[in-house]
Image (tube, rainbow, N blue to C red; front, side, top):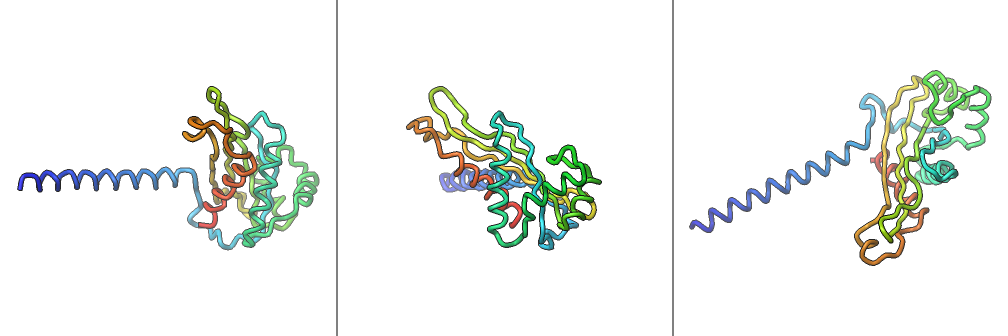
Length: 196
């Protein structure tokens, strides 16, 4: 009888630890996403994707990630993305000096000029190879935000980090996955946070 009570006690502790673990995993998942509860994201039909800000040493990182993002967003069939040339023309006509971080006024004017519901901006924080001892792998870290065209208000943000050196890489070597695969995984992760 004493053993049964002891087993019940340990079972309850295991249950409490499992619940705490699940709650902390869910909370950490929610930290890297925000959406305005007053905005119907399902009503977004057209978007302009601005040139991304590049905080990495790789000069072409922002352009590469932006291209992958535009292609993946178009492939969902949910949102029409204005061609990059139209976005560039609008930026030049309005004289936007920092397209990766337009002001509220610039955002509203651009959205009106090229007739889109939202403007999407982004930042590539990490892109390329990371090393630890003799092991290396590719990593990407990016964040995006969606700005409503009528008000210039941020209605959605999300971030994702993918790749890096895994335990398998440390034990077996191999150099990790190709950069394009890691980039597509991060972009898919971000899109899943929008179309949830």
